[in-house]
Amino acid sequence: MSGWPWRPAGVLFDMDGVLTDNNHFHRQAWQEVAASVLGLTLSEHDLDTKVDGGRNPEIIERLTGTYPDEALAARFHEAKEGRYRELAAGALREVAGLSAYLDALESRGIPFALVTSADRVNVEFGMQALGLGGRFGPRVLGEDVSHGKPHPQPFLLGAQRLGLNPADCLAHEDAVNGVRSAAGAGCRVVALTTTAPGAALREAGAERTAPDFTSWADWLA
Image 1 (cartoon, rainbow, N blue to C red):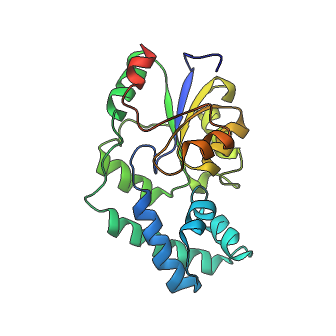
Image 2 (image 1 turned 45 degrees about the vertical axis):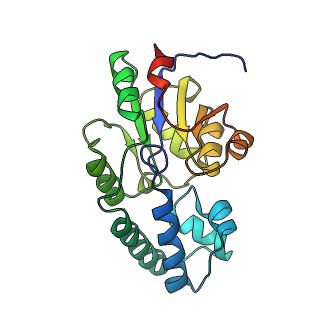
């Protein structure tokens, strides 16, 4: 692979599965609430191919073939995200090497931003649990975009909020749809294998995959 090592002008981080390995809590919440609210029994294949990456109404459309009306979308979102927070309370930990990587970015003057499909409540919940609230100033949340992942809009907006060209940004994702979003925006993508297999992430557009951030501070040096 050409062009590595490479010094990005900025770094864009997804939250779930990237800052914290929490996908199993989301998957359980999806299974429980899809059954109770939508009457759907989600298989592991459904969770792997339709649920990871994107905003809840768009995921419901993938599962049912119909975009939910406002009332159903709101009821599902409140139930699913509330259940996720119940499951994850007290159990979130940062992905290995994250803090050292953020320190290295800051020491080199490389700005970074959050680009997530999560809503404001879940972002604050996660940031507080991880002690990262003061470290991510620029943020793109699910409610900030009209098109969620895999559409490139979230990462285009993330780069814009850093004042950078997406082609000069490194994006970290964990889901196939997230990788498609970042790559479609023109970012170079290194994906974490916390959620999906490396081969699927590379096929979606990731240039590299890694299990965590353990070696990334050294890579920047």
